[in-house]
Length: 447
Image 1: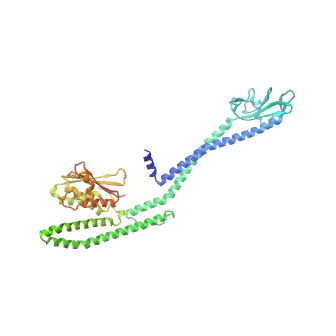
Image 2: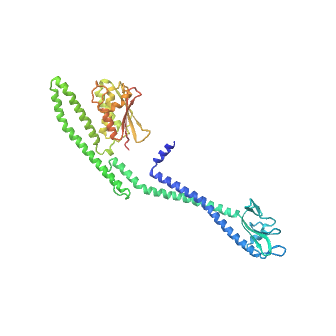
Image 3: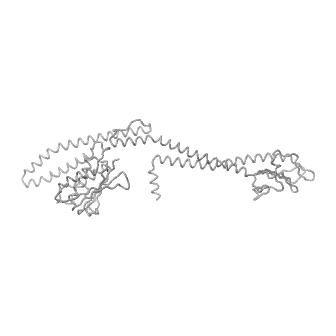
């Protein structure tokens, strides 16, 4: 399972990768801001409250008096009226061993401590406080002064701030995501344009890509144009060479065949096999040259159903005495990225092999590859004797004939395999459910 997830991550598009990275980064920043900002604000407000309490503490210390009997008095009233309003949440308290002086806001309560750290007020509310101990001249007992304020209003302020902050962060989050999405789409638009132009080149609507691209991509476009031009030039040159060689060899070989036919039976028996072998080798290598020389191979397409119908009509006449029925189940709308003449060559070899060996039925059907939706398998199977599993791979090798009594050069399946490979496809042989051979020709679907 981890390998599948890793493979899926590797196959993510550039846009998905950028969006995923942006979402992860932005989410982390928003969460960090949502957590740290309120705590920082609370710390700031708490520090501000303690600074104000320190002012009150200094004011009390400056106006505190002790008489000869040790009684504590405050010479002036503090300026904040909350000290005089009962249970206001703002309190002060001055105490020594014998006396205790407190603000009217405490009423009949005291500032109490729990765990020697947390202070609580008249309504048992948690307090933020400042305290100090000092001594008066001629008075040896320490005097403890405490000034405190209710913590709840501060917490409510921070809580309200958090609600507003999260709303702002949410709006910021989605707003930045939209901006990033637009930025990514705009930044990757040259690649989308390149993909469309490459599709047009493959379909034959263009011969090269436009040169108007950002400077980071322009060298790639230039190299692609040079590669496409060079490739098409080589293909055209190969086709011409194949045609020239075909015409150059056709006449001398025909003359040689005719001369062999005039010889005595013994001499003819010796020379005919080498001549046929030469013919087979010429057909094989010309087939490869023509296969590699298809013009505008990037934009080729053909209909397998249509070509199979045309080829089967010819084979029905050639093998009329065998009474073979071909069932074509391929959708007429299916188009494959193969030149029609090359598809005829490949399908023709497979069908001819099926016509030679089937007992009565040949079935042709198509199956889209489950691993790659761009590939389709053209399957030809018959009800003949088939090929043993241990010999199926050898049957594809060049010049191998499993049955010497049947006419042929042993090049057909090998030519099909190599032609399929040139189109980024493959040929596989298996045992058919009908009992005979199952030939699976996999090629690209024309988009």
